[in-house]
Image (cartoon, rainbow, N blue to C red; front, side):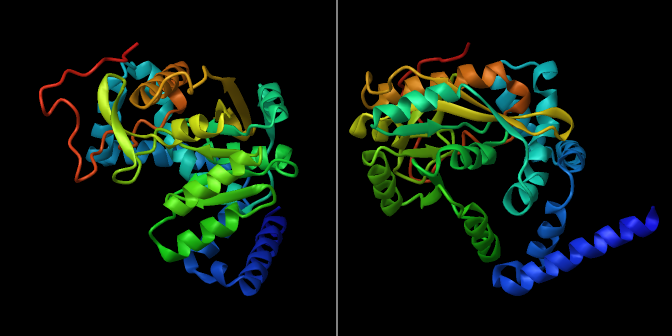
Length: 318
């Protein structure tokens, strides 16, 4: 048994060395480690991720404080958010497998909503909150629909040069394009929708300065992107909520697709508030998979949250 394990490890190492020799991006030491991790079974990566999630929660006071404050702001009890501690760690440890490893089991729930929306030919705006595995939603879409209707996904490159290059390489796959959080990226997404294709973005990600408005999120002002609602309003595209449920014991993922009320019915700030309410309802249905430690309420330096001038803010708490 020991000899077989050593042989398997040696084979994996040889494959990693070969990949690194043929792709300069993979020559970085950390990229080499990620390739090794990508060969591990998903159940083992998720098990390690659960341990990592609890270690960070217990030993990082700032992270734990932000996590608890955000969960309490949403009215979520400890019994509901406890699983999210492990899920946050799984989010990190599963990435090597999703970026560089063999495919993982994925099934769909609500795919008929995508079929119907694409058949209308007006494009689809997928909004995916920081819920479950948001990396898998784009990959699963590309595998199922990308040949005829590619997805253009909005992303913010990592600050480390080697990691940004690795991200770009991992996400560059058939049926999946990426768009940066710039004016050029917005134009790229508009063109995709006008062709009848689809775009994907994280609507609860704090946008760059001057690219959002302050809107209530679980009863507290949060700087919220307007891009998702503007894309839908300018193109008439269908808006769908999509998220990747992480199944226990490494059994894979379920991509859930949920229809939304048309965001074109409201204008400006009203559409953004409506979108946040949709996200809140979805998150409260699955609090154990939401990324509560995300700094959702951070403030862009040149903007002040509403209420500083004495204006009362509407509450969206459920």
